Amino acid sequence: MERQITLIIHFIGLGLFVTTFVAGFILNRQYTKANDLQTKATILRGMRPIGLLSPFASLIMLVTGIGNMHILGYSLFELPPWLAYKIVFFAIALISGVIFSIRGRKRGAIIQQMVAGSAPANAEVILKSHDQQIRLSYLIMPILFLIILTLSVFGRTGAL
Ligand code: HEM
Image 1: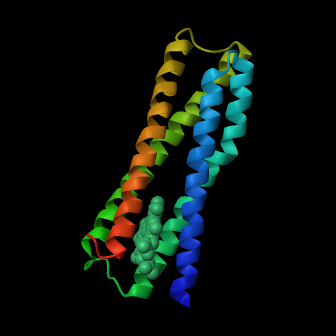
Image 2: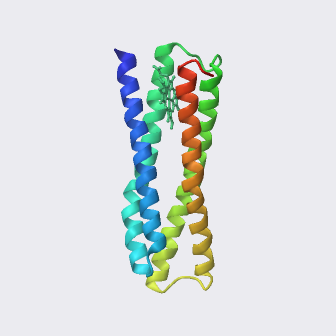
């Protein structure tokens, strides 16, 4: 019973992750298409709570993942390869997520400054670089996520 409960919560975390990716991707496209700064600032404000969901989803995955390991009797020093790789990719995804979210915050700040007319002279260049990095995150994060998902399913079904 314990195993089923942690697995259900693990899957809820997984669903939350997919939701944040898809919602973030759609809103980021709207942001890119918007022609004026005020609209861009409004879209970014709407993206903030969605961005906050992903650390929450990560925490759910980590806590329930550790719970799953405990229930299945895995020790950190004696992991099946799929799980060892999964934890490594999860750590990479966490670090990438932190880096991209710092970028996102910086982008929000520069847009606010541009709206208020207090942005530095090279604001457009800085904004372009933030935009490129964030666009890249919508490629890198789903790839990492797919790797983790593939390792989980193929690993658990004995195909790895
Ligand atoms: C984005 C992160 C994660 C995703 C997408 C994910 C996905 C999954 C999926 C789909 C399964 C079910 C596999 C199956 O039964 O066919 C699973 C099981 C499992 N996951 Fe994760 N997981 C993530 C993070 C973690 C972390 C961080 C850990 C460990 C610290 C972990 C440990 C486990 C374990 C031990 C199982 C086997 C549970 C069981 O069969 O009862 N997961 N995961």
